[in-house]
Amino acid sequence: MKYLGIDPQKIKIGVFNFTCCEGCALALANKEETLVDFLDLLDVVTFREISSDRGEDYDIALVEGSISRDDEIERIKKIRAQAKVLVALGTCACYGGVNNLKNQFKIEEVVEIAYGKDKVETSKVRPLSDVVKVDLEIPGCPVSKAEVEKIVVDIVNQSEINFPEYPVCVECRRNMNTCVFDLGMICLGPITQAGCDAVCPNGGVGCLGCRGPAEDANYESFREILEENGFTMQEALERINFYNALPGMVIDES
Amino acid sequence: MIYKVITKKEFKKFVNGLINSNETFGPRQVNTAKDGKPIYQFKEVHSFDEMELDYTLSYSSLKNFFLPFREVLSRYNFTDDNWEQEIEYRVNPRVIVGVRACDINALCKLDDIFVNGSFPSPYYIARRNNTFLIGMDHLPMDDCFCMSMGELVVRQGFNLFCTDLGDRYYLSINSSKAFNFLRNVKTTDPTDKDDRQWLERRNLIKRSFNTTVDTSSLPNLLDIEFDSPIWEKWGDKCLNCGTCAMVCPTCYCYGIEESIDVSLKSSRRERFQHSCTVVDFAEVAGGHNFRPSKEARLKYRYYHHYHGFAENADEQICVGCNRCGRNCLAGINPKDVIDDLLMEKTDEV
Ligand code: SF4
Ligand code: SF4
Ligand code: SF4
Ligand code: SF4
Ligand code: SF4
View: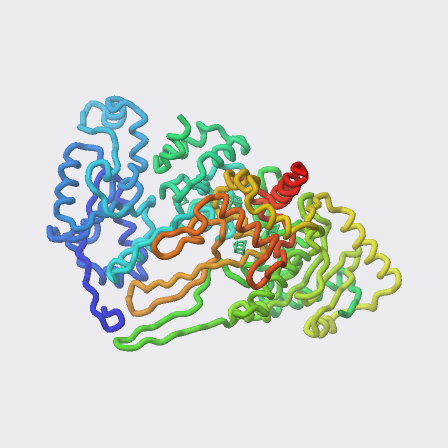
């Protein structure tokens, strides 16, 4: 593995899971056609989905999942202390993600419904950045492997890491999709950061905003658009609350 | 230009002949909108009957056939101490059937930049030269305003143009290729009756426009109105979603992205369609953004379309298809914006 005659340094990574479905960690093991090359750039110290090795000397911690228990706070702090760079991987880690749905209810009720009599210790769901300093956020539910590949290559080559600033619509229209608003459905694409290649509208369903807000998102105009298209704020909030990744849209409302 | 008349039956035979030996694209319904109206796009077709030639207008423009939304311009292969560049712009001959006048005229505007401009694009030229275009007239939709932009009539930039005379087409033949292809089917010279019907059809189309945009004072008006509050009014609505530019047949801006493959053994340079309405379009190294506000970004698009700059200085590049207006979720459309600018000055007088 040489790049223009130079031997780049492999990056020592550890992959860690918190409250989530482990979908982002699994996404890292996807895209078989380039998987060997991808792993070749990495020195995998710990990554339980693909290896039984358990090391402690990682430089970059890729952390998926949100924080929902006290023991998780301890664990993430330890990881933070070890890692030179801590990366929040996926919507759960960046924004709380689907787990946030729990925050809409009383904790006791949630535990009762989910676990019955077996009381488990759990608290409100939080993104990693509420608990530790996060150096880089890679949003997405799950993360896009192509984007992660690009970021890893950028790190190896010491290039600047860039995310699209514009909304999902740009990618959606490049893919020549029919706008789902024209089909009578809500889409959060106009206020959500692109980078997923508009997978949801590609499949004919509206964006749920998993990648968080686009730069300079126009919430006010978007709210008017929802109304003009006959949607209530409640309907929009149901979508936004799914990932809770568009706080700007919610705060503005109150 | 040579004129002939062909029956619709014979025309079908002609097109099926083209379909059999070339990659062919035509209008097809891809969706039904919530108001029940069909949504069309140009898609590959394998027989004449798959096309819906009485379609209104394609949802997105034809631009992607010539300026793909994303394309690899070149690839680089690295060896330990050297590298090689690979460039390919080979295009198989292809046919597009049923192209509307505005879309043909839009291609002529793109030709000014990518064929006749200071920096011709071999990628564009290869696609353009290898595409056989069959145009077709139609009755305008309520919000079409190509007539106001002077783009209702096609003069160049196509191979064949069909004017619908009911049971037959009046053909304007604009290339030797088209003339030669037509030898395989039966056509006749236009009779006096054909000529009259052709004119009647043209007049009917002209009478059918319901939207007029007063372009007589553009681009001067835009010079005068540079600081108008109108821009803020519309800019405040803009989502900077780029939709207008992506569906527009003449928006040609692009970005270039270079990426190294995961193998580190190769890389590629890609071109992607970009737009001045998009937030990071005018952002430069170091993070400075030359157009930091929504208002500035939206205004820019209007200046390019109705004022013109660079390769098309003082030439309006809008052809009046209203795809931008129809697809803008925020309801921003050329007719209303230009009317507002005109009204503002009228009120002040
Ligand atoms: S479907 Fe969504 S992302 Fe696509 S153009 Fe419409 S609003 Fe934008
Ligand atoms: S379209 Fe929206 S919800 Fe779907 S992956 Fe992209 S950002 Fe996430
Ligand atoms: S004018 Fe409309 S379509 Fe264009 S960027 Fe603004 S909101 Fe999007
Ligand atoms: S209007 Fe904007 S996006 Fe369109 S061609 Fe001009 S500068 Fe480019
Ligand atoms: S600016 Fe709008 S009306 Fe003019 S050519 Fe582009 S999409 Fe059509």
